[in-house]
Image 1 (cartoon, rainbow, N blue to C red):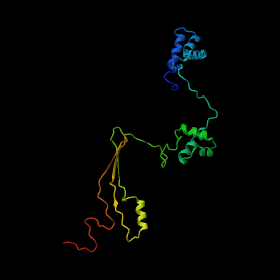
Image 2: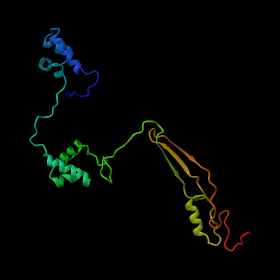
Image 3: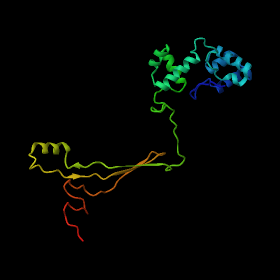
Image 4: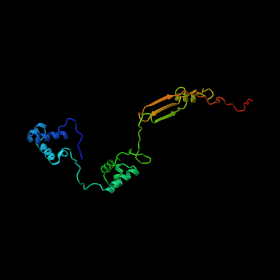
Length: 224
């Protein structure tokens, strides 16, 4: 398995560069010192890659894992399971879990990060289950439409209208005429995240004392 790190394109000792370095020694017969001067590396580096290529072939030119073969102080499986259980059930942070389990907060955070639970927003806050997201194949396949009607607002600033009504006598206070804002309809394309908002015209609002069209007042005769 390759553990090659990300290197910039002009690096000298990429796996391909190491192959050229080894080729200068084994194929062209260059000395170790001449090859080290050519690639601007130490002679010990040339010997290392030469010996690894002769022992392992092409696979020896890739970086090896620096992970130790054994770790006596590794947290036990039962402790790790307890940390993950508290995270999923209680939604506690690393400090709180560490206090309950007797582990260092850094150790708890490392366990959570390796299990993909390093952040509290990884999962639904209500059900504590992983969030399953989906994606549509074609643009416009799923469109969300929202209609919202804003309440009537008096002409002028609301604060001025309220102040005028409270300072003047009720008998001479003129009722403010209300205007309505047409409902806005917003369509949002799920895949492209593009939206369009339109306003539909609506009739002006009536005052509170005016009966709606087509209705009759109490006690009015009914036409035969």
